[in-house]
Image 1 (tube, rainbow, N blue to C red):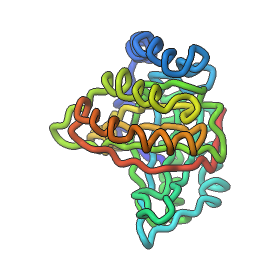
Image 2 (image 1 turned 120 degrees about the horizontal axis):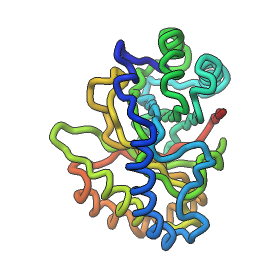
Image 3 (image 1 turned 45 degrees about the horizontal axis):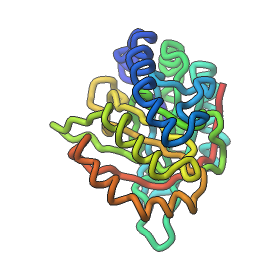
Image 4 (image 1 turned 30 degrees about the vertical axis):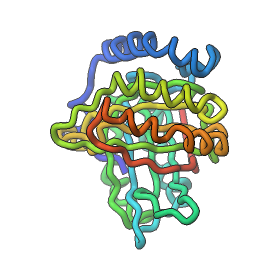
Length: 277
């Protein structure tokens, strides 16, 4: 489902190079040395040739879970996703769909699926949305009974392997920081300190890539984004990731107050479909 309001995504268009300069050069320069220490120079910063780069616009979709909520991954992959790629074409750089992975004996995840669509050409994307957005909205009932939560994001930080290295079957810890009136989310601290700490403590044996997306707005282009930040932490080795989590989770939880007053929602996911141009 991709919809925009009358003002739509166009209300959020920024000069491409100004955004990339502000976040790309400054952000990568600041974080590069720290990631080199944590990951080694070969994995210090993500390779821009992976198709996803700092400053790129992104659409995040979250499909709520629940006892009676169903999500048909086969239909989504084989019909809904292919239809989106057909309609939107090369305006989409990369499309990734992940299903939630329930922990044995644990509670059901808050969401059954998470989707990211990285946009290569915002103007072309909007034009396609005007023509086909309603058709896609009408198709949602064919694969889920839940109402998706969608928002406009911008890639604020990334490190590790390039996005194109992530493929079907890869595990990802999806982390969401809900928007709360009056809360100030410090994106620079999160990128340059919190995630650097995660990468340093967990290491390349546990984590292959991370991406921090800054919430810009809800899909109507005017309301606040439901989530201040969405984070994708791709898992290189599940056992190493779990072992590091047992050691360092409390350390990381103790750091949250330095960038947000709101605790995150985190749930494991697995990539079940990928498309790119």
